Image 1 (cartoon, rainbow, N blue to C red):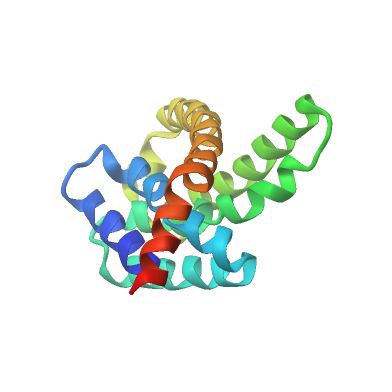
Image 2: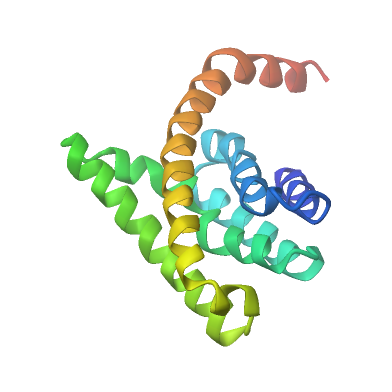
Length: 164
């Protein structure tokens, strides 16, 4: 169910161009209940199914590849959050994100031949800076979403499924 919801959010990136980067971040929130209730193994499976469906169905290839390279962040986040030193924790998150983004950029620009990426190398640096900011904001939003799910939504959802 969460993979279907994630895929639907990914498909929305075709409707509104600004959702190219926002839709994968929103879709990654669908991993939260899976991770919370079933663990990393099912989280990875949900991410893979959503990635495969997004690559097959999403008209916005850039958003689909952004999901493939960044959508797994909520699965890795608890591991990165175990780093005790806050500066090192932030640097580790930025290093993971930078590595994933650079690999994504290279594949989109040189393997898939998306001309938008090749011709706008300086603009890509600005986009990267905005994505770093968005990633840091998303990290905070995801922390709040975990609290919201654990405190307010989880008991309501589990209670409703037990009653049926």
